[in-house]
Image 1: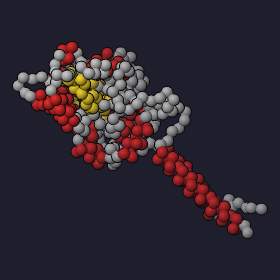
Image 2: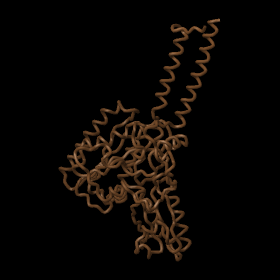
Image 3: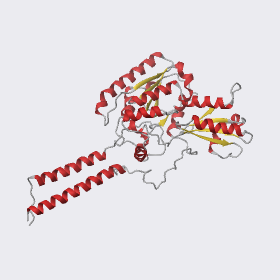
Length: 408
């Protein structure tokens, strides 16, 4: 009859083995990344598009310059470029963004956001050649003082609180104070977050004098052509991603700002809807220097194929479309936000035109319709569990052999 020892090294080894399995299982079930880190990975799911329009009368030299200048100028940006021949591609979805006045020109361009909003790019200037005008237009699309400041600070800091001042100085000061208090609150809680982040959120203020030089930034935030009489606020993180609604006036409170900001420091698998892990990116050129700084700060390279594969699986559990976080997500209690037209477009982008290169998920695709009751793990975690299970099997077999040897 086989005897089992409840004391001594055999029992201790068994307990240790099961404790090891439990600890490894808990470690494997935790996400390696927080929301901020996922925000630095560009999965090219939600690019902007720059459409260059030509016709049969456009010279080959202009078409060549279009391709060459745009190809080089838009490198390392989140903009895809495509030339549309208005005489030969009349049914192309991009034709809806070309107005009649532009159609009369031999060449013109339109910028289209992931939400389907368009921004005409003028290319006709008397004093400059087409090539010079196009280069200047691309530089203006990709760079501006405030965007450069935002990107610098999102790389180093937890996130950026962007405040666009209104006409009332007293109201501007009030929202600045609210933002400062939220920054202090986040700073006091950062040690208790799932992963350490070196620097707290940063405040970037855009006064009325800078509105004119930030037309593209305004457009990407849904404020194109809108007069800003009251303060506006947006939260931006990672690779210049906008998360949450565009707060305005009385909506800019400590509670509302904190509700959005706290999400950025959370574990990427803490129960969040994964569509919120990547907000719409601001238009920008992402340089090698920026990428190197991010990799140094994070301790891993967000451009690594292995990292991208793992994060892609995390993000794909939600959706292929990444608007800002829907209103009401965080349980705002102070007021009922009534979204403006731009915000409604942002939350419900038109589905009659698809510019993304990735296919829409099939209704039968289990990834596009995740079951929240089923715990999902990436292949890396499953591999860890498999290896731990194999080690436990070997250890258990050794214990059984020892027990039998002692009982002989």
